[in-house]
Length: 392
Picture (cartoon, rainbow, N blue to C red):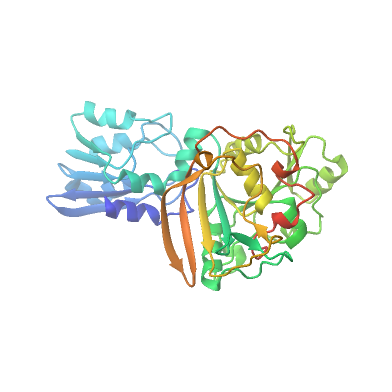
């Protein structure tokens, strides 16, 4: 199963809206076939592994990181291929949260007399496909908050400066994360303060040759200038702006003339973009995961609404100090420590001189109710709080 998970991870950033899946066929202790799902619309892992095994798949064991699907989508059901191959046992890391599957694949195997073992390395499999699980169970994209912090939790000095908190290895890794994400999200304050390009850039590759995330700007009243770098028609990929229904019609038309999509929805109680509603819209576009790189205001607003699912925090060996230095989070926050969101099974590793701490987020209480400038996604009173490290 460890080999199957390794294979699945090779397609990171390529399979959306599908999960990453790997499979290995073993006959008499010898691996005779392996495969992984490369991208949506192409053959699934089980099919590729069984094809490689050929006749050696008969009476063999199939190890797969996700239960075989039972429905017709872009490809035929994997269950049919497994049954035709004549394997005697299937070992599965986790069941599929897709409502069209949800244990039906395992039930089909058992009805056919095939031995089934489930839950092998399930934690690792669920972590690998955390975005897919969120997408299927919450019907919205999986939101990963990425931030660069000093040891005292600041993202900018009291003068609003943040270049550079982290070292070059960490910044290169962030661009790799961008290339694997479906979308990258910032607020209007970040656009105004830093004028970021919001692209993925990898060493030795042209920007046009890299898988680029959709650029998403939360800008309730369309304060961002058309001249901003992230709206350049020369950039590959697309850009979506989220605004309220009351946003200036002339500004909406101006953006749309530049082939920039403007989503408009009813405002929340603070008069800003309803973030939960907007995320539901993004799910309909098959955007399954988002790298949130906005500043303290947007990140705090997302936390208040329990819309952040995972954190990737880079801690640099620096101390900014000062009461006016910019913190990592704004928003309403919590009153009691017991109410605080927590990282589940956090992992850590050094990236150059910086420490990356990551983990899924668990919430202890109900979401805070929106209202007030401190809880808005793109508050005009806190543009400095919007700025992530580096700006682009």
